[in-house]
Image (tube, rainbow, N blue to C red; front, side, top):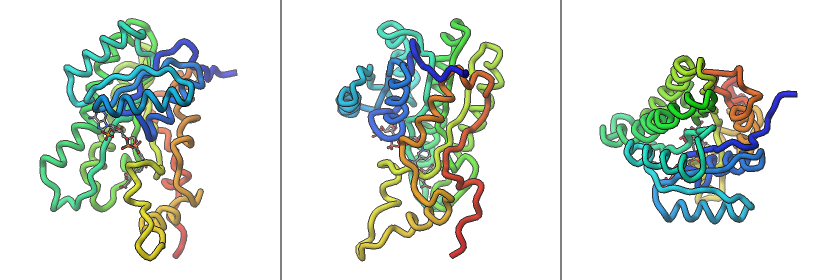
Length: 263
Ligand code: NAP
Ligand code: GCO
């Protein structure tokens, strides 16, 4: 039977005070891993530590901006000293800006690319040397429907997530011989703070038009929840996926397979 256990493993999940990262880290803890996470400021880290504690998880939290290479390198060194070598990295931290491209400032485009693509590069680069020495490692990049599809107003995010898919394949190619597997996890439309604006109830009490659109585009006819991602994330972090490399596992309720319900 394949080994889905994470016993004895140290998992770093970036941006995991809440949302998808928090759900994945909580699932990893249930599978036996020691949880380490970062967020952008101490308030968020404290919020995350309290939330993990409420789940019975003794997590380790660090303040770190994933776009700042000095902060990332210092955090990884501190984790290795205080907790242990990082066995599993989930590059989860990310933002989105929904602005028509012709109205988007170059600085706004750069900020999304910096957090959603440069950040995963910086953090993966920081953890790979110890994984090479250990002769094992798992890197999971949180991709998106926008790794495959475009839509209005999300040009920077789609460019970043498309790039993240190829960064995933390149890390898999370059480090597979060190028994490091790098895969993507591609959530569909998930109910988190990041998508809350797309689900707001309208003044007349009706559902947001985009909410209705996604329901029609999803065979499962529902938004995903962060918990829908936990099983696939545990699989990609466990020995059960040791021959899965450079793959993006879409957890989207079938969106990418479906033309959409006829109006
Ligand atoms: P979220 O609720 O906005 O959480 C993102 C987390 O990342 C927040 O804690 C955020 O902190 C943190 N973060 C942002 N910039 C950071 C930085 N520079 N350094 C460190 N942490 C930073 O997002 P989510 O919905 O859970 O999404 C998590 C990941 O899944 C993202 O990569 C997102 O693109 C991806 N994703 C989401 C969906 C979806 O439908 N929700 C679908 C596909 C993919 P702040 O609170 O300060 O922003
Ligand atoms: C959007 C949404 C999506 C989701 C996710 C889909 O505005 O289209 O925010 O981008 O966040 O990435 O997989």
